[in-house]
Image 1: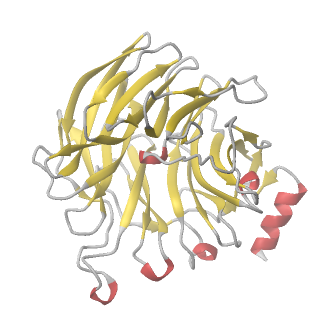
Image 2: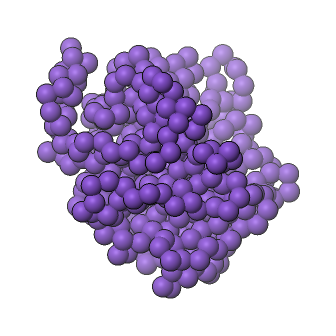
Image 3: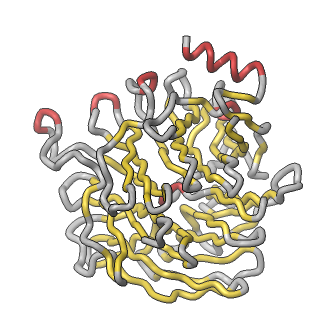
Length: 391
């Protein structure tokens, strides 16, 4: 019955289970059977809105090697302008952050280094040297931040930098690892968020417990607090004694309320059905509470992928993709103040073909902007975009 109601809503108009959606637009100008776009980055930060202008970043192989691109759509434009290339060499996992006045800050991995650049008319800046990857960005409290995974001995560790920007010119004010000691196992895929009181939070994937555990730390008085688990499942508790513990990966962070934070990640504690979407809240105590399953029971028997959380401080939405209706589709669930609501399909990212890898943001007016990958029956993949307002 619920699936029939969702289908009827999709067919009868743009209003869809409490959301009113625009018609989807194609972002990339070079789709093809052998061209493979990727919307994969730390904190899933592939879209931003500045002064009504939408910016989307992705990586594809149209040139024969991976390259990063940025496309923008001014508020009054009917479509996206032709994309610009960000990197000079092979380029991976770009992210984008809104600045003021229709400007953006983009960052990416290129040839084992991490770079950033203000668009338009900025000069690119190398943030980190050889062995750096998986960069992400954050803004809040009057400051700009970047985080990445950087080689330190045998393994990578998380480094966080404070950036300054003046008329398009970037500089690294300071950079420090979350932990001074060399890591004992791999760390990666950092997420950053700035709470309303200016507290900086960083979360990441960590292998120190011999299985992947999202860890989190906060910066206070110039230094980072000792990392603690984001998940409430202890190591050594894998069902049947299989392995060191259940896996969890790809944490994402956003601010929530006046002082709080929210995290969403993929969690395999129910290992028979694959990854599920989980969330936890920090109400401002700098401690995340109990873990909550995000997706509803209709999504419990299959794996979820590419989860993220977006918030403007008062509205909060989680998105992901799963194949509950037979093919991958993009789903969302909004927080109602006490729980996550029923899962809602994004209309343009639901139906025949494969729709996956959502990235999203909420602008200053509360409009939800979503981009995703749409692969049709002929094997052509497009980057697609739509926006929605809550009714």
